[in-house]
Length: 136
Image (cartoon, rainbow, N blue to C red; front, side, top):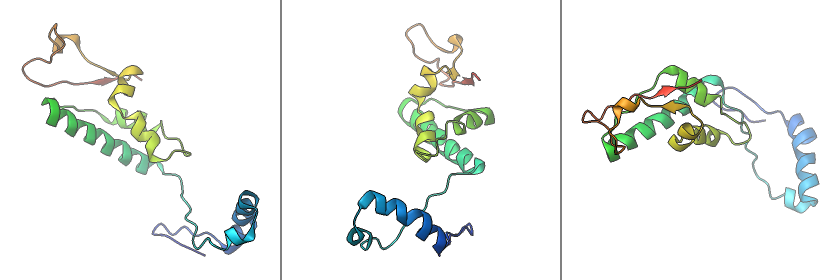
């Protein structure tokens, strides 16, 4: 019936025997179903796609940290791997984005810093360099 760049297709039989009965149970009336022109099917992200989402999210936060606070953030592949594990198929990319939020990482103990890097008043040292470690 329909295809995409990945070569995944959804058969007419699947739509007629699975999807349409679900829609009919929900809407109850055929005149509502007649107004549906197109159905978009969302497939779960694969491992590589989840890693790319995690990488982009961390790059976003690194850019913000540098722009707002002149702090350089860096991470290794273990951090990306841990973030992609937070993927929930029901929430899509948002679940990875939420995992990557700095507050969530800190509150869950996934990011730690060396106390020697900070002054007593909570400011970073003059180098503005901070390396975080992942606690797995």
